[in-house]
Image (spheres, rainbow, N blue to C red):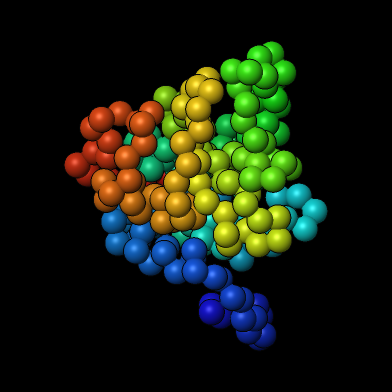
Amino acid sequence: MIDVQAGLNTVHINIGTHAMLINKLVTILAVPFVSSDSGKGMKWPMIENGLPFPSDYIEFINEYGSGRIADFIVIFNPFSKNEDVNFFEQYKFILEDLNYLIKSDKDYYNYQLYPKDNGLIPLGVTDNGDYLFWVVNSKDNSELWTVAIIAARSPEVEYFDGGLTYFLEGLLKNKIKCKSFPDDFPPPVVKFESI
């Protein structure tokens, strides 16, 4: 439970189990002194009608804003003015791109994209062009979403347990390995650079 101060009123928000993991993430990935495009104090949009962002993602954007993780990963941000980082611009672009690939060779590219059941919604990108996704395994509860990665132009999807902050924490602690990531990732010094 988080208390959000809004004028003289206090609003209680149940942030779910994913968001509790932001506390672990901040111990290994320092929060910037000034975050770029933070969602703090902003009205959070829906991804689509009735489809909210997961609470751990909201907490991540509220704390970190827009930036590069370990000089390699960028998480899309709905508040960014930069179209290369803006969640809604990239959501539209990436799904159009992947739908084009699927239409060009259905046997090779057989991704399940949102709004299909267990469909993918893009949430980030690496410097190598790998896409990070939410796996929408529940259209009623975004707190249940997990993470997946598609390497650049690969037909394969690599699935991971847990939400975004669980995935990032495991990745940065070297407990989770992604097939498409460089062997030397994460680097010895992990930092977040605002962009």
